Image (cartoon, rainbow, N blue to C red; front, top):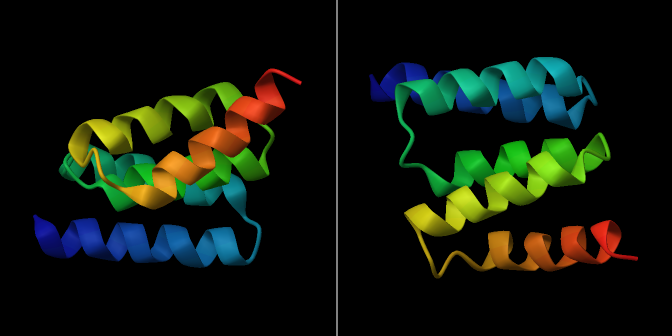
Length: 88
């Protein structure tokens, strides 16, 4: 349900802030299993992959965020940054 989705997403954001990236990824992934139509959760997971230098997975999540909401500017911006890392 939406309450569990929000709780997992918020906990994931907290884990990311304290650089506990693996737990953050677990929570974002669980949130997306509950509701896969949330562009901000894909974006948060993409940022976490970026933090871990896993640019391929980060790019994939940016693309998923943009499939949900094509005008989502933060994902477009992060996608440009990740592409520059992948293709430098």
